[in-house]
Image (tube, rainbow, N blue to C red; front, top):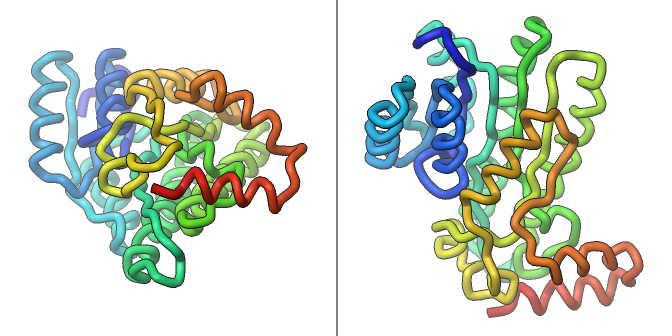
Length: 261
């Protein structure tokens, strides 16, 4: 890979917010390690970005539901002699339904991708960043990480972990040249909503564009911010401000209605 510009490793790079992160980074002249389960999507992304922006895109087809995937990704990057400057943990998925009725294998896979893969990739690359005293990490969480989620219990809980984990590491890294940022999008217009069933819920009434969300997240990462809330319409931003003043029972009931088709 060329040494000019920054190299970003982006998970879930072939679609949605991840694809927009890839485009933004390429527009800035940066090279990309694009990770996704979708081989055809990665092929199209690589061809498009290399042709349009003259950058290099190294594609890694990997299923992050597999426990060994993060280590395999790190080992492949090392083997290729690629130095990663930015780590964008974007891959994730959700699902709607009562916890005791949902397919347990799907929820286990959700925990693996949203929590374990994100944490493992961070653990793999962070020591290198700290040793160089430079690097940026962006973890894609969600505004739902700030509230409990009846009928989306595991998804909301995994994102609560991502937000808390990211904030804690931001504190640990405060005396280094490395930063950790959490991106908390609201409902965003991607295939995620369709695949999870969330697009049928009131939360998805006014979804933001993936490009707008990615731009806010990328900028916050570059600036080393703790977190950024992106893609929320004005009324939902106001609702967030009132959450600390609501009783837990009222908040849970409200969120349950928001998750009901």
